[in-house]
Length: 375
Ligand SMILES: Cc1cc2nc3c(=O)[nH]c(=O)nc-3n(C[C@H](O)[C@H](O)[C@H](O)COP(=O)(O)OP(=O)(O)OC[C@H]3O[C@@H](n4cnc5c(N)ncnc54)[C@H](O)[C@@H]3O)c2cc1C
Image (cartoon, rainbow, N blue to C red):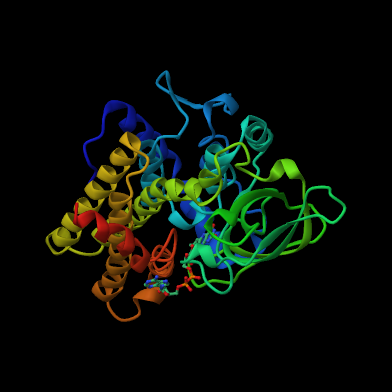
């Protein structure tokens, strides 16, 4: 049940498929003991991911398969990797992976040469976790209402960061991260800064969640000192220093979130295939195939034009709904007591509900999709 991929992507897919089962075992351990996972069990596939998704000048160690190099920078490579890892491993533990992940996208699009070098180079030496902190306790959908502030330090040395963030992937295990901040009123006053988690005034704690356990944390910044050189985007025109960078990153991130949701749906289908006659699963398989095709189309569109927004939004919405629907149907097909008798399915059903808020709820995706219908 996979879209037609070219030889290069099929090679990547086969590599991930072979490595992914270890991810599933570790994910079940993390689900059972989320608080013990400050540094979670070592999984070779995640360690490999730690040095990928990094711009080529700072990535001396690409994945090499059949003589071909993979940096996992294109949307299509990321989608194939994450879908296959979720389908044969686990989606939730992918969110706990070390490496540049979402923070790296912001640094790549908003950072100058020195900022990129300082951020990406240490990620090569040992598995290092990072975060991108945007969401705040009062709301995440409207990023323009953020309250975290970055103000000039009274002693003239850099800035002071003050505020709180929540639902932040890897917050509690990261060594560094990117924080969205307000430096002045209005949309141009929203900027991004790199924060070192060892700085005084920085506090992180894990968040207890029903699904995607072990992935999310909360952050508090109490006058954390931010060196001037950690404010991203100062070399760019004023309109491109803040939101512009992350709006483009979202197009790619939504493809990846969709891919993980499709992978979770595939995993559920394959699990059911061991218990339910294939004919009863045919409609589910057909739906998964359609959403997978939409996700791949979205990734190809983003690779052709990174400003493409409506297809990633549509794919993320369809895939999140698919993951929720198929896991719920799976429990009902397996009958009373299914949650107790099939703990993996119980986990996936809880995890599936994490996809709607991730990278923006369906309501927020609709605000992106509808304007494109008038074109
Ligand atoms: C697994 C997971 C990983 C995440 N990782 C990160 C991360 O790494 N970094 C990070 O910063 N955040 C992360 N988040 C947070 C996520 O981005 C937010 O949950 C999301 O943006 C929604 O914000 P909120 O939960 O505060 O809901 P709110 O913004 O408070 O929204 C509440 C409800 O109101 C609706 N709503 C809000 N505004 C509108 C509108 N204009 N029109 C119609 N309806 C609207 C929403 O759809 C939602 O149903 C993660 C979340 C999950 C579940």
